[in-house]
Image 1 (tube, one colour):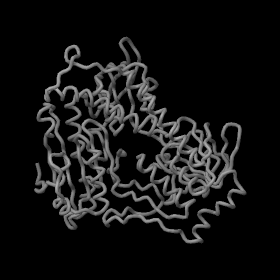
Image 2: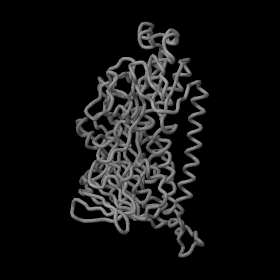
Image 3: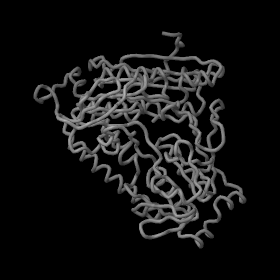
Image 4: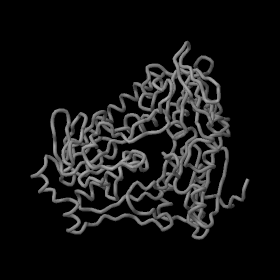
Length: 505
């Protein structure tokens, strides 16, 4: 996931101090014992805390970061409680990463049936076309998510954490109200994540968000998606692949702001080629219900009809009703909680991590932050999260995978860079007949030969870039890439066979 206005893999520093170490070879964080004075100051002696509070740690929000922090802290012997008012696992498990990826798999089958013809396969369906059943996908997804919800609860129970189902409201720096009861804790951790935001405009009440789109009663044959970030792009690919007439609107000149310019351009070309009606520099003026569905009036004077309208125009920290007015927790200009390197807020006993702090809104980042928090606060171990070279993927079709600097950011950061690019048709599609091109790009700091950015648009890009991210974090040079023997025939081998620098189109 890339955050609008930010280069993927580069930290948007939400901590109070510290500059990213993007030029130095990354150092691997090592756990070590915190000195006694720091340990006493930070941990405040868990055994003493037991005598003064109901819990050593009370976590608000059972999403990825909150659950990881609660489990780890409990494993260190802390008395832990965690509160959730919706569903175990948070956004990722319930209305984010997991169901999204399941729906991406479903969408890819539509193309797969067509691809199979070039390999000799024939279908027995009427008119040689398979039929998609929305209810089957939706309900099977619900079953899987329920299974994962139960696993999260069992993991917390197994760790010894007390789980509360209900809404938590902060009363003071050490007290939380849950229903009609109040509980105290030495430390409070806010991990409530983000929430979709729909701007106010005439008819905005008819728009859906990513929270609702997975569980519609009926499949929308005509879907309009508004937004240009990864969520909008992914859902455009999903519903286009499932057979809906999909239109994506974005107010800017090109979507996926913050990604490498070549990636953005290539993705737009391939997504449009796949059948999505992409429209840039246009927005929705109003929505009204009418005969035949929803009627949209656009800012360019045109109109659209749709069965559903999905708004994916941004998310905000989920802080409503949390009771922050009762404590000294400062928010930044974007409404996110300000924290320092230890995830401590301006209220010394209250901490926050994950999407609610406005940093990199990625599940693995929240997991890493939750682990780092628990280790430091309750395990007397120091292991900071390294925000450099964080890989990310967009599960559009074809996929986007990226790690490190974009070309634009690299030109600002380094004196001189060397680029390596390639665009080609994957071997599979020489028989499938699909007119889809893969794009790959390496960015090298010329002075050191270090590879500082790797970008890909193509099948399995996320899987490929995950491995390459390890190499970049280890400081791999272009010479190391060149000396690596590729696996043939694969798409990934192209990254180690790029020999000639790109000289311009």
